[in-house]
Image (tube, rainbow, N blue to C red; front, side, top):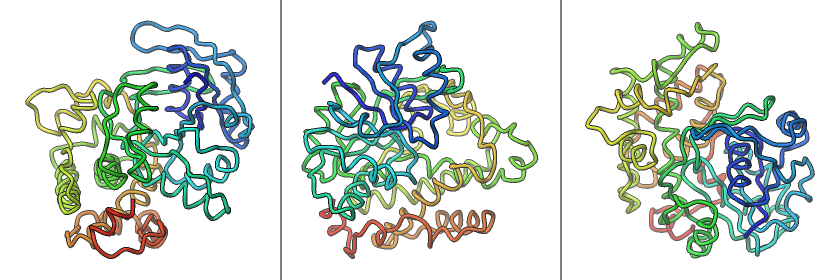
Amino acid sequence: MRNISIIGAGNGGITAAADLQDRGFDVTLYEMPNFKQNLEGIEKEGGIHFDDGKGSRFIQIKSVTTNIEKAVTGADFIMLIVPGFAIETFAQLIAPHATAEQPILINGAGAMGSLRFVNEARKMGIQTSFLIGETNSLTYGTRAFPAEARVELSLRVKKLFLAAYPKANTAALLEASNELFDCFVAAENIWHTTLENGNPEVHPGPSLLNAGRIDYSGGEFWLYKEGITKHSVKLLQAVEKERLAIGKAFGFDLENAIESRQNRGYFKKEDQDLQKLFNTSEVFTQIKGPYSVNSRYFTEDISSGLVLWSDLGTIAGVPTPNIDAIITIGGSILDTDFMEEGLTLEKLQINQHSVSELVDAV
């Protein structure tokens, strides 16, 4: 594979464009027209200033565009690095132009995106058998500054789970994806990647407990350095316990909060408790925010994460009181009915009523 189309010019997309172009691929970076400002700095500079810890260098990007047909047509590999809530929107853009021969990877926090992509395509009358799947997290720890056409890469993730939808295609998608990255291992299915997504476990609970501080700080807040404390970490661990129990009911031996981040490279393999590992992580402590209670740490990670986990817990007979409390309190703070608006089995068009049926469905 040579021609790589990256869909989404946020932190991850701009980083992937610089990294893959630097490693010899020809990259086209796409952004939606209403967010074209994310490309303007790169167009002006003619590329991206890329600092991966080995010094800064300038990477000339083959192409940037707001034309989705141009971005997709002829690509050897299509990578979506977009917010979870936007999957259906991007499916509407991509599905009419993509072929069954083009691998499509949703690179980011797992939220059943590949199933949702296919469902949206079917609603449009498109019957293409896409080779599509998703990871449980992003392949990078990174910060991008679009206006400056600049990237600061702090981590190339060492281990991520990957699954295709349907699961019978995982081996083929893994083979294609391994030409770009060396961090992927096969997951059991997309339920597995979704339950290995650490964001709903780490972000909403501690962020809710720091809501007053976030409001007062006016944007000067650092969740991992100051918001993960000896008390707020207990809520994180309570959600972790419920997630692991759901995973066990589905037959998965899920990684716990420490294992997953050590395996990805965010934590050093040291004998420290979870709070100290977050507070001292060389990668996490560089991440500022959330800047407000309207950030994705609250909205997306509750809506696309915890709501679905609660639904899975109900099917599996696993109580989820802490997950449900965060959904309820988050909804009160944000004046949002997350149970109504969030991602559910019904919205995934999955009507099976047992764990085994859910597993067979994907």
